[in-house]
Image 1 (cartoon, rainbow, N blue to C red):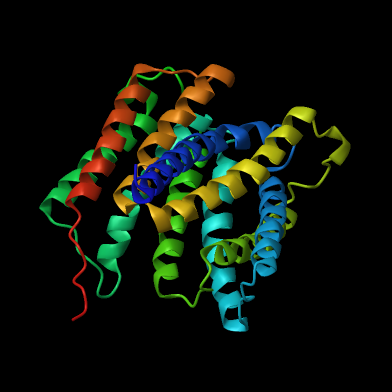
Image 2: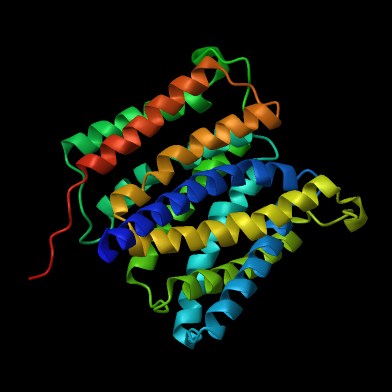
Length: 310
């Protein structure tokens, strides 16, 4: 066996290990959030999570020779971190006080649908073709089945409307942040960029935590061991292993393979919520899961490609 074939075999093994880690880790973060916020305020827990994760990533990248972000890049990191981590993850954490973690994951799985709409609305953006429009309509039908009125969807579970609204706002905020990041001034190292976004996002999360009053009357000594384990899991695995695996895959695997995490994560989240969180697994959840994930796969497979510069 040649050295080249051995190298290809090792790379293939590493790719699948990283991909499986991404599936399990990021899919499990929704349940991890549910556990952490049992005794830790949601915005504060997210602030601690991303502050510590950001410090670890920035110190690590600096130690291997990566340059620190410039002043202009820090401004970009502040905007992106606020939109992605406060608007995206922070609102998800807040919503999971009232919404099952599996359903939260399914709603967030519709972010690619919001990205298609955002891309179509921005100047010089790529407009969806008719297949993409059909996929969007089907996807929103899936959302309605998932979170619509219980007397229409046939569900025994009534979802909190404010929690649902927060999840949809999280999708919108993540979309705006993702689109902004395409033209933003970012560090060359993706992990340095991620770490800086976490640091700046944590500041926004702590500010909202203080302003919202969620810390009023909260006693830090009431934090349960279960919530601490959840927070530690989110820091070490959710934020670090997940992002490192994602960054490695982006550089070493086809994007079509990497993007499959978006289809698998909601299923992992639903199963974990059912097995360990006593969340109801109703027929409408399976139906909505199939419709939403199917529509996202269909949209991604039919999305028109942006024209390359000459």
